[in-house]
Image (tube, rainbow, N blue to C red; front, side, top):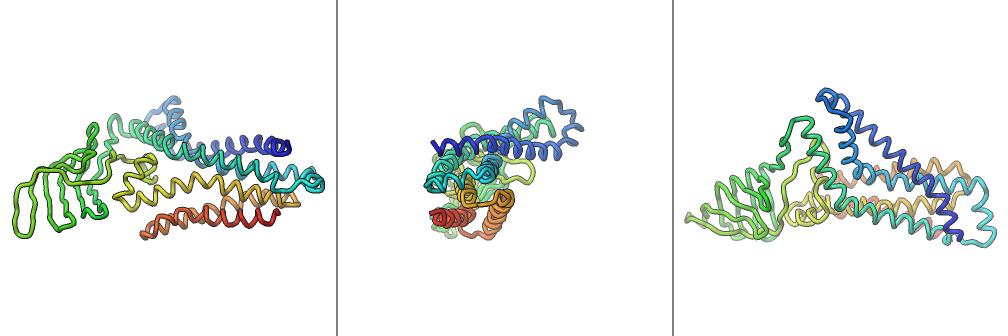
Length: 336
């Protein structure tokens, strides 16, 4: 009963917080694109489509940020009304109030995981296609990858000058492969499907060159995609595709762990915010805590991304959650 009462205090500011962050992020998008879109003659329907396709990306940020805002603002209202003091004086343990807030944070983390796994990548792919159509005309975004180098563990090095998606397979151009035994394969063209790289060319073994026609094993199959601007090139890749690409691309492994960590961020941010809110005695601290929690998480998030640039373990993507998880455990222990 008391848990439902606390949730009723938190849910209205949560909706307000999410709408606020969605509005801010959408306004930022429109302000950066408005001049270009107007110069291309984009209408209101075109702009609305862009905003709609961008919405899952916006929500992936707005949900955890709105949760922190809601927990601290909602609990500060209970502090101002001395309702938390009355509950504690009546023998209600703080952990009893923390439990429903943790469940809310977990539910949002799972919702965000579904969004980040499938919905957001597909929506961003549609956003890129729509923006490309407005800026460059029909069919400008090809999905072609150029000068791609892969090093699958135990299989050698695979290189292609160009990779073009074509139906259920990918066409390869300018192929060079060095297998684990030092044999060098070359082909002008080839096909990349679920079985591997199918080539018809030549193989150099020692000093002997002979014709080659066959399939070289390759553990991953995915469709090349391009993303516009300076955004993460893996943003349009689903979680399942990231898993496949992670078998042959080190940067994809970090992107995979970053995607999972971003989803779990709502749980740990909500946990810390709830534990802080239940421990405060003055409501004024809540507004400062909102800023500090969001800023601190962003600093750690950015730091972990910098580590990835130097081929550090992709597990560092979980650094913000590890830190906030430890902080949450400490604050929960103090609530006892």
